[in-house]
Length: 255
Image 1 (cartoon, rainbow, N blue to C red):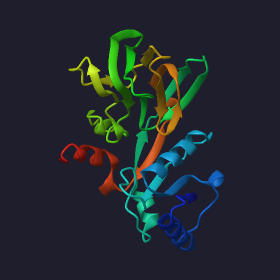
Image 2 (cartoon, rainbow, N blue to C red; image 1 turned 90 degrees about the vertical axis):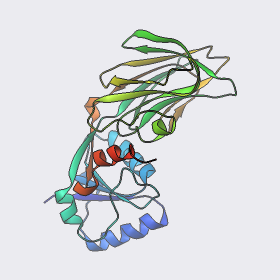
Image 3 (cartoon, rainbow, N blue to C red; image 1 turned 90 degrees about the horizontal axis):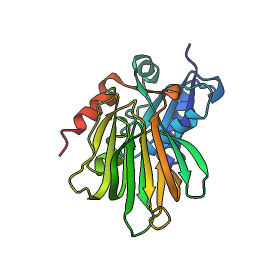
Image 4 (tube, rainbow, N blue to C red; image 1 turned 135 degrees about the vertical axis):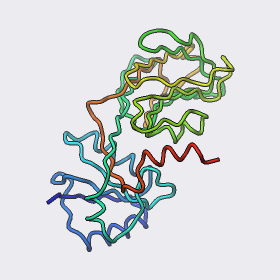
């Protein structure tokens, strides 16, 4: 029998739902589980997945939405959970690994499930040099910033920055500028997921830039390198009728 752990957002709706589930089903501590059920919104799901990345054993996660949008979640229902988990369709999500070097020479490595974004810290625009597989492809991008998004994250910040929606399983990354000024006509690139992306901050002291891996920020970076980390692939579980790949596809038809 599959052993399952329950985790929940601290919000009142998620806590109430968690109490109902605890009374209705059997649960084990996280360190004894084979699967995880997460209650909350997309933010809590990202938090749960990041917690998974810190574990030696990566567990599949089935989320139920008790937040706002719940793009990464299934519908909340108390009844029929055992059957839903048995029928759930697994989806592999490959996180990004961001290696950032600050202007003071400090190094930091952080994972990102949705995106890595570089953002100007002051009113002055950022000036960025972009490399792809160690080849300079943009000598100078003048913009508010730029981001690298996974397929799972392509409908989040990337989409709001006019980046492309990437189908899950496409093995692609989106490289998207944020409010570009020069070159004006460059709207980004779609790259194979094996691509190594480097971003060097030009005039870093005068035009400071921060790097954000999902929700974790490193300020005053000088250089950032981003690549897929297949050694820590995550698994999300979805009801067959609410699969993540279908959701991502249908986002392209929403006006």
